[in-house]
Image (cartoon, rainbow, N blue to C red; front, side):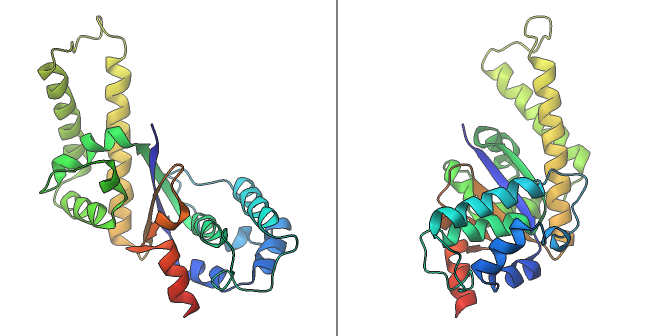
Length: 226
């Protein structure tokens, strides 16, 4: 079961890094020179660790070419170019939120004016824009409580017990739903009130299908190079 992953990205910093040469990116990551360049993290959310992303970026570049090119990231003619763009977007992120696809039907669909046809809908920017707009008309506690009550109702409708003495997973699962929905509300509330852009993707997703601010990463590279 894959996670859907959301990042809040500083687009100005990303555009600057996308204009740098692959060689400059490689040398900077190797020397940890870009750490101070990352946007300030939001302490409420997890963010990829510097050293982990540096390693991923260097490994990707090293596996793609014998020696890094002077071409900019946007002009780099490599099958790995879009994947590098995703990694740089994660580098320019202030925080991330992630969740199992299956749980998102509980968290997102009830707030939309339409049914979610499948998990692929959670990769569409319009889904998150509509959901975020719906959240703006409620508060964090009310939203979280509505999800928990809906989950309880669904369980009872399937004849499942809600007694902790009969199922020890009830209380931990309830707390997990509450924690995740409260953090999701805060995440999207901050997104609406900031200049950050939403990066949407999923574990094991083709880099070409990651989306930033309503644009696929492959299209973003084309727009910047043009």
